[in-house]
Length: 304
Image 1 (cartoon, helix red, strand yellow):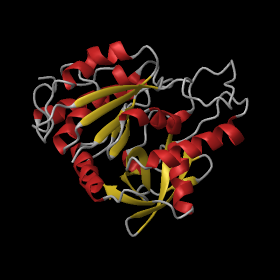
Image 2 (cartoon, helix red, strand yellow; image 1 turned 180 degrees about the horizontal axis):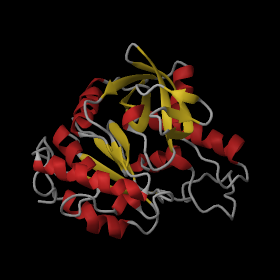
Image 3 (tube, one colour; image 1 turned 180 degrees about the vertical axis):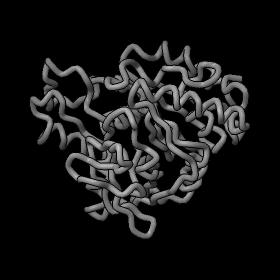
Image 4 (tube, helix red, strand yellow; image 1 turned 60 degrees about the horizontal axis):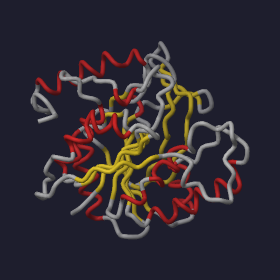
């Protein structure tokens, strides 16, 4: 089955102190996106779509896009590589972008920018997260089973495996029942306390085994229709002159679940999530990359 991996790579990584998506952490300078791409291709994905800022395409081609385009997918076809630019060019005429606004409109807007390149079932991920080999196998298999309308999937992770000792993080706190997502609530300042408790400024202490969303979603192409409606409504009724207003993908998922229009299967990965929210996280991520190469999970280099 043809399936696309859509990578949200346009973020600025402000808290990390640089462009975290292109910081090499593998033994040969591999970036986290290369591990995602490698795992996705061996799971069965046939297309890679990078969502990027204007001016990033040349850099992305040089770092990994060009060699990925020479790869062969599991079905024997050439891996297709596309570049979707997230900017204001696709914003409808009825909305006037505030002249002071510099950043685009969040993850919902980002995924919508990929619509011209995605005609098959697809998976959405963050560029700066490592999700593990098992996660791609599971979501690819789930995409095979999704109905063309009204079905989606999400890979969930344990909260205790996604916090940072360096500072606060934001996570989507999930309500799950019988393997299906009932809702996602954004907790924006989750911290790991010295006593080992995990707490959020608003929600208080959270169980370590709380299931969280790390923006690892699986959708059918029909999802774009709902996403476009949601984004247009966001521009009409919420964005206004607020230069920081964002249209977030989990918000739409939650809305569709509440309306009975979407059923989201929650998949549990056997692997641990790794990410680089802060610069100090880099060393631990690099050490884990080396361990995975040494143990044979990955070959000596991902770029052959």
